[in-house]
Length: 219
Ligand code: G3P
Image 1: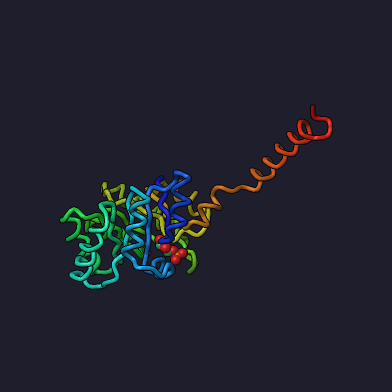
Image 2: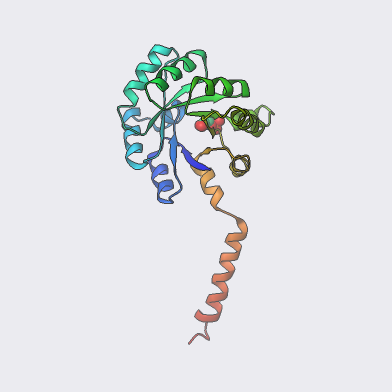
């Protein structure tokens, strides 16, 4: 499973990239707003750091405007992917951009029916929002499993990006279900690395070593 980082924070991307774990980046208008910087400049800096897909979301909600925005965004770098909302105009824009060879990611997916239509429109990626479904007491992972099955039934090439990831179990379950990608916020990437038994075990190893070789009796 590929790992994308879900952030527009360049410092976080730099840190995660230094771990060699980052296959791509997803941003959205909320994440951009958090940075409080000019969006194209931020995207340029991100594209300089990451060679994989860098997802930039359009703000317009009308097909024609979305396509215009997309044309501007793809000028930033060749690894830009255009993120569009899962609305009628968004699906129309996907069809146009796909025909032009521009990669798309359809976001804010909350149902298998929406994911089916997205694949039929020819999108490169679909982003089902797992955490937000969990928030309303619906099992988010069931959606991933349904989309996987539907895409396999018909051989759709659209890749599933598990999004709205909130904790390590979301990542593990995404991998168990065979999702193509999980896009993960930086704090969750850190949580994935840590395990209390690793820390306890390491401290014991180092203490034992110190006692044996660096204590009073050490030669
Ligand atoms: O990738 C989508 C993500 O940014 C949304 O996450 O936690 O706001 O539901 P969240």
